[in-house]
Length: 408
Ligand code: DI6
Ligand code: FE
Figure 1 (cartoon, rainbow, N blue to C red):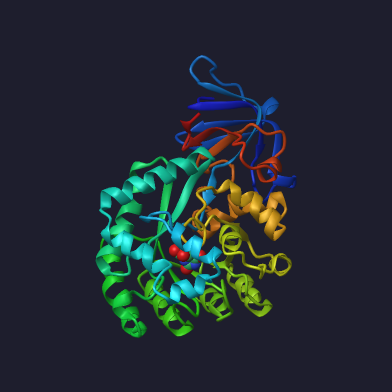
Figure 2: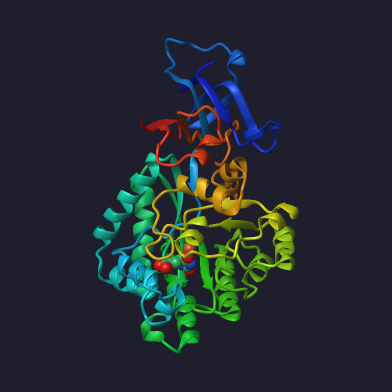
């Protein structure tokens, strides 16, 4: 056998759903890599003979390998910060009140309109570095802090450039319908026209987005406006997803699922009927414990119902300066267990296999199987549950992207 690299002395949480062990675990395993992909995986004792002199062999010292962590919902290209708003909230103002008074998302919009592309790129690059240290290999980044054509395109260009220049792979999502910009106050329908007829065509022309998202909420866009944007996106051949049922139940989840959304995100207020629609359409449920925690929400997403209908649960950071100012994906493993009572296995699946599904990348990444990309991490842990159990002692030893060690 001739391979590019071989990994031995490892335990593997493959997260392969066809395996019948928890976490798809292979103890005392080995992985062989060829052309950036997994060419062989199994028990080390079954590893076929290979040329030891010609093949680099990496030893994992008995640690665990998991698929690279995937953060399937972030807003990580932004300028400025919202510490002042954080302080206002601790002095009694609510997130919605601040938004309605022109703060919140709109204050980040102002900072992003003023920031140069180079500044935004540098901020994004530092954030990706932080995530990579915790084992993240793929990230989704949304626009939505521009709210005018020029700035939305700028944010998406930065996200695309980050994907090109950083080891981390980036999927981009156009979230032009994130909030109503000050210029369109009381003219929300006109703004939706701008999103559909001006922003979207330019984004498509320049191939700047893989998907389109909308914030469907009382303080943002109603069901009808949301549907218009999603249908335009679908018509243009883009994937669709939705911020839905975060603060109230407007029925966005079932509407988006009916149109084939990859995921509906937040969904604390989703009802059983809508969950049924998700199951009929293969739509994932993206849980965002960082926003739940930071906004001190009390309405829990209905985990038992999501389990009952077998909905793929995704866990993501929602990293943004307002509702989830937490640049840590692995903290979400812990928070999803503590706050939402996911099992550690569900949490890890939510940041690997199911996250890949939510990004329409499940044929390439998300689990360690022959033919998939060799994106994985080596962790200094005794059992996979330790990833969700503890926080603050980063056990990530090495990160491998398409077969190359990018961090060690
Ligand atoms: N929901 C969220 O949690 C983020 N966007 C959204 O639609 C919050 C964005 C922000 O507050 O800046
Ligand atoms: Fe979000």
